[in-house]
Image (cartoon, rainbow, N blue to C red):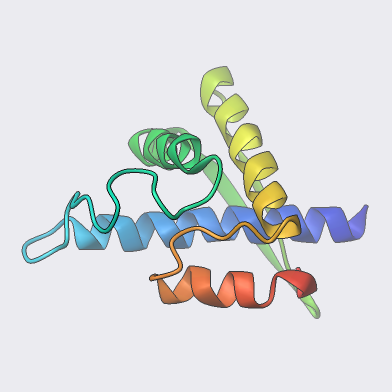
Length: 125
């Protein structure tokens, strides 16, 4: 149970870090929404479009999300919740699918150093 809480907590932290990175890229000189190599959804593995939609939904509704982070000697424990039932459901869905990606080693956004490191150490999460 404790391992599950830690794993889920790490995934939620990942969401917040990714959100900040994505928002920072949107400013002047940011990369924006280019199609990149192979067009949309290519080379990202199964579920990429779903994951992308989840990220965008959570970013659009970030003001409805409340987070608590507790530092532990061996990592962190986080609680992410929302009073909005739709946002809460999307948080649960996102955590489920990111956990699946980590366990099955189906990486996304490998051009992003954060994700590259995350999936490099997936066995330790």
